[in-house]
Image (cartoon, rainbow, N blue to C red; front, top):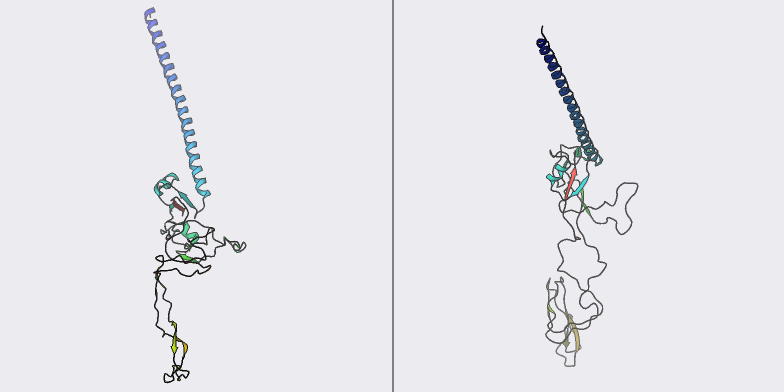
Length: 270
């Protein structure tokens, strides 16, 4: 074997060794990259797991039957809390919820209907604390609507009273009073009649055969059923009537409410 042949073999061996080392370096780099990817995946998975666990803990911290006011529309609210299937949170609008944990716990097949409603604490929570005894006690009548305690609106006596134009002794002049009295049931009216003669018959009527000055008799009209009388001042004024009150029959709104902002009430049922 001459020197040229030996040189070729050496060159081939060097090339093989070099290629092997290069492949080994590539494998080493791939292994390092794979290790980095695995570390990245672990970190991402840990983060996702923590988010899920946080959501679960947050959901579990709100017991079934909890009402949550929100300005989000119901489908947006449920997507935020991770309830895309609609099985955990529903609008509190009186809907049926028979296939829910809420029904199993409360025995009520419907969630409360909170549409157009304000929240107010009941006057009695348990038998040990009893009821309130101050001015805030729950004195109004309550009704049972779908198993929930409902109370209709009412209006208390205002702290600042309503005031009419003349509060007490006053009079009315021409033109400012024109109406009718209320119907006041069966009644009669007294009137005076001048009777001639001192002798009266058995009906209390004068014997007109006797000629004398006579006397004044008080008569009464017959009972005329429910009716009223027109009242109008054409001239002069009414008498001063002393301290009195007037009933306000008209005006006002259909309900009493403070300024408010509308929200959605969501309730957890599972």
